[in-house]
Amino acid sequence: MMTPSENTPNGYAGIVSNILFPLNENWKFQRHFRHKNLKLLLNSPDWLYAALVFIENGTIRVEGIKNKPAENIHRDVLHWDGYVEMDIPLYSAVLTKRRSLLQMAKAWLKGEIRIKGVRSLPGLIGLFRCLSKEKLLYRPRPEYDQTPGT
Image 1 (cartoon, rainbow, N blue to C red):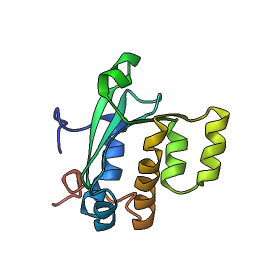
Image 2 (cartoon, one colour; image 1 turned 30 degrees about the vertical axis):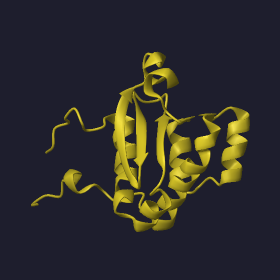
Image 3 (tube, one colour; image 1 turned 90 degrees about the vertical axis):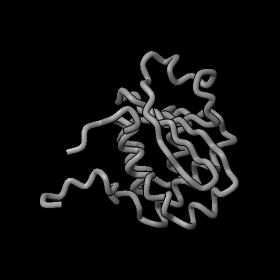
Image 4 (cartoon, rainbow, N blue to C red; image 1 turned 90 degrees about the horizontal axis):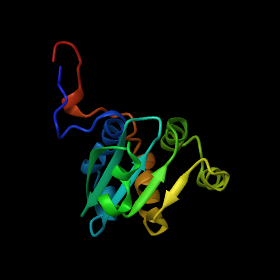
């Protein structure tokens, strides 16, 4: 069994990392993001860690950032381009395509979703589209495969 190290994202950041990691092997994602550099902060107040997602020239990596106190995730500290905050059931609905973009816009208007850095929103939408088109949502990372006998 693997023990967490300093470089392994914890909590919510670990979940996001496991979901996004397969995109590094996806040629459509690499082609779409080959000239883009984005830093997106995905936060869920239900967890202790936020996920800081780096998209750099067609590759993606995730770091875990403690989200308490709130100063830890402030734009001046982390220099993120975009920020999205919603609870776990809403993130799950987005990633499993149970919510459309129109439904997400309604949730944003109701205040269920907080978004900052609207200019990075097309990048985030492109990220979710790559995930949903390739059905990469539940593919486990190789180093976390704990199948008995391997």
